[in-house]
Figure (cartoon, rainbow, N blue to C red):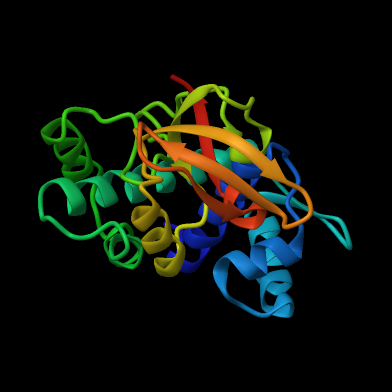
Length: 220
């Protein structure tokens, strides 16, 4: 049975791969995602390679094997079902749930996980908008784009917040940029590097381009 550390690494590699839209993930990305030193990430990656979970290329990065992807998909499923349960059933705030789910996911049996999934109504997305893999490893696909890539004056629906740190989630909520919200890009100012937005029929407001890249939307 894989250790919690192995499960965390494989889950992070898969999540980064899906977010970036590429199979290979750089060591720096893994280290930043897990909050560890690059050397620590490299050492652990070599362990994953010995267990045939990844293919590692020095100075390039890692790619999950079929075995690694299966494990990673299972961990994403656990994590996202737990996050949904913590918000919808226990009433925790969406800024609190990531760490709690991290603690719980390694001890959950498949039987309990499936009961939780059924209890929640087999949700397709977690509170942040991340798709929840099915029991057989399938995951919902959607044509998402960030706010900088949106056509102007066209309403879109917020689907995913990619930065799930407490500070950014609070920022997104204050602005009304939460999954399900209708948002329209009014204009973009290249000089100030800002984007003017409108939520529904509310007064327009601006956010920086860096923040706009972290908010993904789909056609309404």
